[in-house]
Structure formats: structure tokens, C-alpha cells
Length: 364
Ligand SMILES: [Zn+2]
Image (cartoon, rainbow, N blue to C red; front, side, top):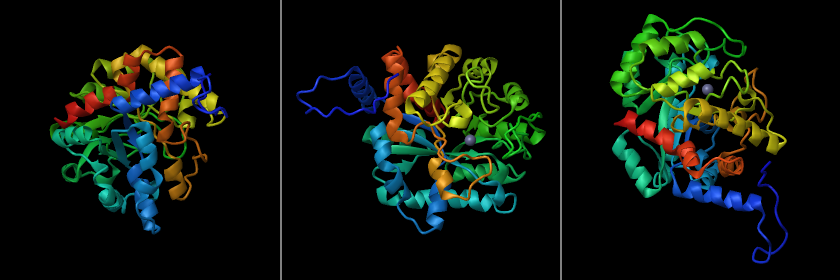
């Protein structure tokens, strides 16, 4: 299995290149020359938490270098409100996270910035600037008032999931928060109204935290392509957060994209040994591509180590659960996929081309 982690002690000009080094250089070149997208990253919540504790320039200090190493062009920042803030402080926390992120990016605005429209996205891509898209991870902050959905659109939010697992006014979600066991029950009438309003506003629907009943309801009521930004394949690892093959097929048939989740609990591996972690991610990717088709799979890594370190521990979280330690390791995954026989064309869609096409449609 490709590791990319060993270093030769010979001088660069004299050493004989190993196959794994050649693959990693190939992967890095592909990342440099093509769009790279992470469709789910809990950035705003972490930035807000760290700034509350006095840190500044959080993205620059913790992430910018890794973003460059990945060749990242577009990153979706979720707006994630922890259960302790609900219901009373949900709206406050969501707005504060967005504004904290905006303020944190201000000193590096020539390199990273929030994008809200197609033109801004194309400008960012053209200038090599990283575009951040905002997505609400659960509609809890709006309570039961769909007018607030428009308010979040006006704040720049361009995607949303109806629920982050925990039941709310819109849907039941895939588990009671923190208990990690599947529950039943689909969308409420208000949830269906929310889907219609999101589509009318120009926001994409993210089904990653819905349960099976909710997914079925979305198939009935959604008119536009929807995404599962950070979910893996149930067939590879039977976790309540992952999608069955028939769901993956249905999402792809509607023109949606599913993003590979690199959370160890969800993918079904531990971060160490590193080779086994990469192999697990490759098996999910290959299955998703087989079932969905290569144009409907991307990355939504859900890297959470940073967020976990910035907040009081949630009871169900394990420390350092991410199978990629940071975005700078993205080319390692790409090299491993090349080694296993993935074609360059398929990889180009996977690392960003597919989600970029989806987001371009949403933003136009
Ligand atoms: Zn999530």
C-alpha cells in the first residue's frame, strides 16, 4: 500500500526515485493544475471558538499552509451550532460564527474569502484565491421561521442540511445527538416547505445527516439536485451516517454529488497505521464511484480534530478521529488512488471537478 511517508537519505539528484515518490509527485501536479474542493469542513465553528478565547488569524495560523499544499480552491465551511446553545442561543451562535469567520479572513482576503455568487467564484478561481462557501449544518438556528432562511441567504449562506442528526422542527435526523443509533421518522411539513424555499432562494440541500425515512422524503419533494456533502458507503462500512447503494444511485440520478467523509468512526478505520487509514478511504471512494458513477463523487472530509480541540468534548467524540491529518495530506490519498489504478480523468473529477460543477449550478 502506498504510504508516501518514507524519506530517502540520498541526495536528490543522485537517488533513484521510488514508485511511491513518482506517484506522489504526479498527484501533487494534478492537485496544482485542477480544481480542488472540500465540500464539508467545520471551519466557522472552530474559528469562532478560538477567537472567543483570544486567538486571532486562526485560518492563517492553522490552515492556510495546508490549503496551499492541497491546491485547495473551494472549501465549504459549515455553520455548526452545538446542542448546548439550543434553542435559545442557536441564532446568536450561527450569526456570530459567520461574522467571526469573515473577520478572521479579513487580513488574508487576497488569498481566502467567502464567495456567494457565480461571478465571485469564477474570479476566485481565476486569481488562485480560495473561495469559502457557507452551509448551515442543520436549520435549528431558524427555529420554525422560514423568513430567517432568507436572512441566512442574505448573510451569504448557500447550502443547508435540514438537521444535524438531532430531531428538530424540520426532520428527525439520523440519530439522537450524541447517541449514535439510528432513528426513524422523516421530514415534517415544515421541512418540506423549507426544501422548497431553499430551492427558490438558490441554496443547495445537504442530506448527509438525514435518516433513511428523511432521505426517502427528500426524493419525493426535492426538485433540484441535492448533495450528501460528507457521507460514506454503507456497503463498505455499515454506519448509520452512510448511504446505501440504492440511495447513492438515486442521488446520482438526480444530478447530486456525494462527498467522501474521512472521519474514522464513519469510514470504519483508525487514523493509525496510516496505510490502513488510506486504504479504507480508497475502498469507499472506489465503491462510491462504482455505484454513483465517476461524475457524482467528491470529497467532504469533515476533518474535525481542530474543532474538537477548540471546544469542550462532546461525549461521543474520540480524539483525533480524522483519517487525513490535515488538508495537506490530500495528495497522499490521490497518489494511493492512482496506485490502485484510478485514471487521471476520474481523479480530476473526484478531487474537485464534480463538486465545482455542482456548485456552479447552484450559484447560477
Ligand atoms: Zn456533519
